[in-house]
Image (cartoon, rainbow, N blue to C red; front, side):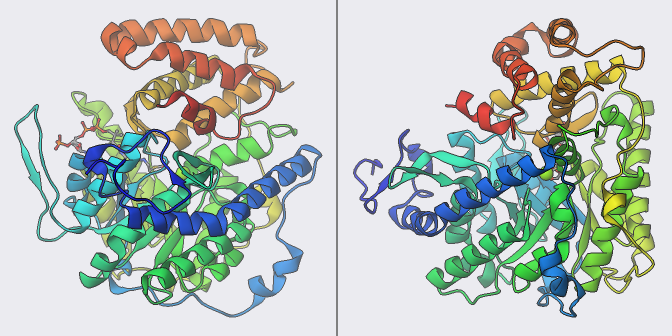
Length: 535
Ligand SMILES: CC(=O)SCCNC(=O)CCNC(=O)[C@H](O)C(C)(C)COP(=O)(O)OP(=O)(O)OC[C@H]1O[C@@H](n2cnc3c(N)ncnc32)[C@H](O)[C@@H]1OP(=O)(O)O
Ligand SMILES: O=CC(=O)O
Ligand SMILES: [Mg+2]
């Protein structure tokens, strides 16, 4: 039946229609469920986004974030989160990736403890991608997913033992323009979570697992409260007991770091831990303080061992363990390097070192971007964490102040760093506009969060009086445009080749990157203007 003949509850529209092959995903019942969530919660989403703008105005005026006086009792009180199910107890290696059919199968078969399938940083939100992802996830949950690669002839299917599935919906700042409820775009997280929960929660529970999520890019405990209310309503609607959903929150904004106890408290019936989303965290740090004195050096110098990043991860571990929650580490961007044994060895050594630091610090697990890295991360955690998790390592020796969290690392801005940001930024946008949300660039995994760092630095260095290269050259719009033109030539001739250069629409990517970098107002998320370019 075509979607036009199907009867949707009043007030629901799909302005671009529905691809017939994914029609079951947007059944009238599923769409009605999403619409209920949207009617109930859309006004609160807008209110919380306005609050983000207000706080930004405060930072622009010189106010520094701090721990909240009004929630002191929560920080000082003795409470823990509700127990987590067995299949979330041991999370030593978590693989992530977009819900592409082949990658879903490969990730679930990878030997990682869990797999976070990503509708967010690793995914480009075209209408087709959003529906196909839901379709693929549903097939994976039902264990019916298969894939036959037309290029290699290889057949893919799930092993008997697979990783525990966790889904990451988009963040509160995005709206799904292809579904309207009473004329308003549906908040993207409600669309993603709503469909996923509606189609899969019952089956997951039947199979002895549960509806598990990762929640991205939150900036306050009030945003966590909103998620908690969404979960309660969703569970009530489907007759699933409250507390069945388990959600891990990414601490990946500088503001969320000041409210970690509060976030866990709001979600205490549904919380499954916190994760150090390091790439968005760096982006958020640059973004929030862009109009202040704080300016960060080259992206390559902002490592996990600089003091403010260490302060953040150690405080996350201490906070989680006090509340009986898992503290998951983050993503090292290195992936296996094909055809270059020396670079390959370096990539593995970098991942090993990163995971060793995390395991020794007390993290209860970590992220990898590629199946080839699962074994390395597992070996490290097996060595330092023979038990399922190390929540009993309370890290009471850790003392982190607001000043520690806000101390920017020293270091130069170099021409090499500037060029790298320009090249990575435009290469990523080229891929993203062509529908791919995660790509290898210069032997590193790049996704929305890492690309945001590159383009935010370019904007800040152009607009900030301290945006001066170590050789004394001032970073200006003219310099940016010259470097962009030169980097585009290199990309076309030496990196992707003229054919992919055309196909991936580098013309549009350069136009968008120029806009993001040179316009006076900083764009909050590149995906917002980027979305206007998608069908
Ligand atoms: C900041 C953050 O938010 S981090 C979390 C979000 N980011 C991510 O999840 C990125 C995940 N990683 C990826 O998407 C990919 O690894 C990329 C794009 C970086 C590289 O992918 P490719 O170029 O395809 O890598 P490569 O060619 O080495 O892949 C080899 C095999 O591993 C598979 N593979 C690679 N990465 C993954 C993954 N993350 N999950 C599942 N399978 C994967 C490929 O599909 C391929 O399978 P095949 O041998 O059956 O054909
Ligand atoms: O989502 C993870 C991050 O590092 O950003
Ligand atoms: Mg992120």
